[in-house]
Length: 303
Figure 1 (spheres, rainbow, N blue to C red):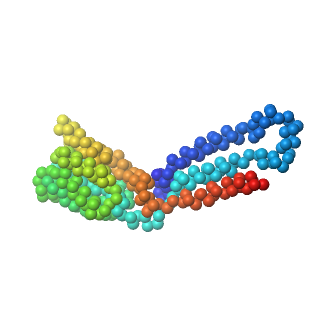
Figure 2: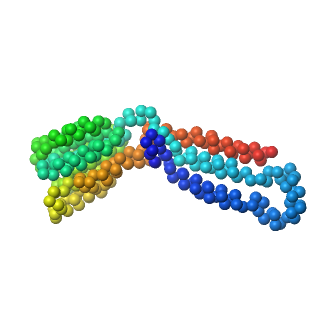
Figure 3: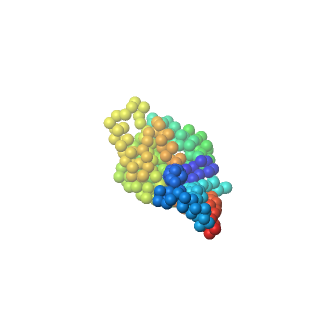
């Protein structure tokens, strides 16, 4: 599916038929209509034969056929317009941000990454959960991302009262929230320095991926630069994203993750029956125009 704002092509691969059809049309145009008959038949006799009524239909009729096939390819590519009120289907997509607030020195970078994701959430619903030793809902799923931005700047390392760090509890919390909201597909962004990640978190990420929720990770590094411990934690964050079917990135440069999440809505809606809710396919109407040239060909054969 290719999205052009309020317009889209639901099955764009069918457009590949058009250049192949154009090449075939050019090749057939260059070929003599009578082929080898000009060499096999005496020219005078051939001229008499062509003047007879039975041979008046010998002129090429493949032009309308090519036009019909081209229109059929355009119909099959699925030209569509966004359904009015499609933005009201709130439970199609959501982004859940899980923000690790256990370490105050790394919190500014984590908050900045979370804000970046919020600014680029588009029409998606967005939710925010904070976690340390346990996970808490900072904001329920909402389509008003701006309301979350002011909340982010009030977060500090004592916002969550539970000591320690349990990313597995944050993932379990996100899973329960998305289930209760009956979200069809979601992206979960874990913003953390990788502390506390273990096999339990990876198993939860894999389970979420099987349910249609992708888990992304944004690694928050130390200001002093990478060290051996940072490298191990970065690897743990990458393993979490791999288990969750998502992408691993860096909190200092969250653009790649934001782009991945933004493309998710277009991709999964275009590949499933959900697109019928958000897009109206006008390809069926082109089928009537594709049939018209064929009717002209059939009429010519009857004459």
